Image (cartoon, rainbow, N blue to C red; front, side, top):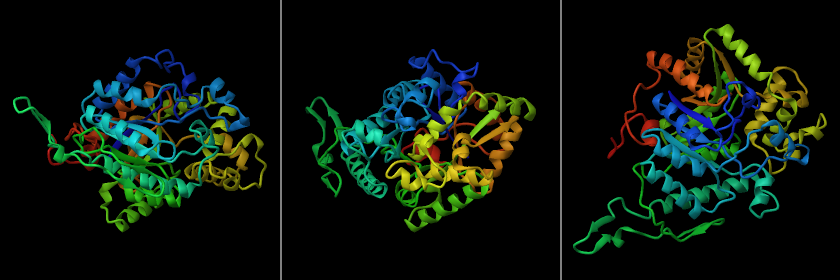
Length: 436
């Protein structure tokens, strides 16, 4: 089983009420110690990795304003994760470290240079959560009037990843000679241009950075659309899956593994990790009370604003019967649209009511009850592990690490120690050539 922690450079992750909980820390968001601490907690529990979700701006789709997000404590990146991850790398030795960066807004040379720098400094522990962006507000922050079409964004993403991989191979691993006597620092014969030219992007290279201990950063992705799944089958080593319900998880899992095979890849070349929020209590009854308490802290206008941001439609102006996909245009995430429809259909709700109820997949219970649920999903081929989205920071991840991880270890479902040093080694479950 693989475990990855979802993080934000702010007090709120996916759960809009978590920052209001008495246990949530708010005064350390801008302190390096906050990020060092959670990195150490996760590494002590042998998590594969953590990654930061990110947005290049402030959500303002709901009522045409960012007021709800700012006032109600919505999911905002108060710091650039790329400045925080090196701090976490310094505090750890094995934990994987992921950043979310857009192929639509950033050019491949910038992406390849920043990510490989992190990968080299962390000794092969970096991951890139590849996104194509889903809001016009981000496009406008980068000089575009609006996002290109969704398929076009993925076509560009294919080229950006190809270009980055070419750039990441600019240097041979043994290029450095560092011979002071002969005055030879590196062998220019082991450095090459990328010379990548596609329809959407071009880059000459070479990078000025050698390969990392794992070669290059691990590629993550979260697309749920048909085009997104094709992209994942070609490139992804980790997929962030957000389906609701075991049957839908299993269908997605089977579909993506079949697509990997069609692309000539092995099933274990890509770990499919299901999103889940675990609320841990000493007993199931206590956990249920904890869940009810924190869920009641979510304010309705923020819930509606969050749904608006995820589906790309201002839900405050939505009228029943309108087609959300058409209203979203080039904005929104297919996974969020699918989740909204699943919630609506399951409880026979209107779209507007369902938009107010969206809550990340939650499992509330004792450590044994949570382990039972995770084991069932894992062994029934619904996923290869989990991306854990917290409610309160840092206590959600601390409680899981302290109480649930040991239960998973006792069952032989999760590692008790790291076998390798790089993130790619953690994901493949073995030490790669040249590794520890």
